[in-house]
Image 1 (cartoon, rainbow, N blue to C red):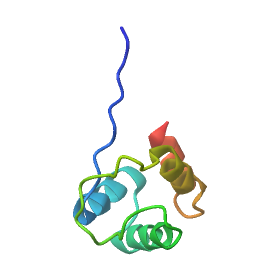
Image 2 (cartoon, one colour; image 1 turned 60 degrees about the horizontal axis):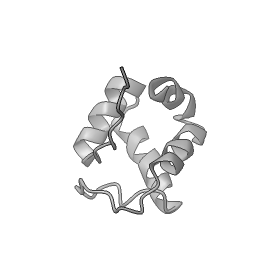
Image 3 (cartoon, rainbow, N blue to C red; image 1 turned 45 degrees about the vertical axis):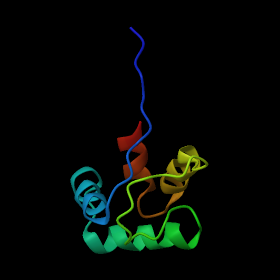
Image 4 (tube, helix red, strand yellow; image 1 turned 120 degrees about the horizontal axis):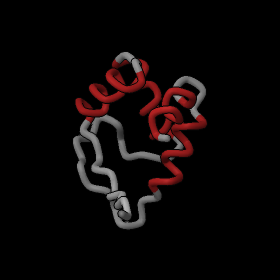
Length: 82
């Protein structure tokens, strides 16, 4: 049987913090620091925006790689995303 992977749903700030705590064991401050850094690099929308839609041009693969490369999160993310 073929397994289908659907496009991920964007996270609100609250859900981002909940999931990073549950899956990555990161606190809110560390999560928002990482989100701010990704925002400053132009890889995500403003982290405190409650947007739940991606533009059609959004490159999910690039974002995932950027998170995996992040010094504070990378190893934990890579394990979870695999």
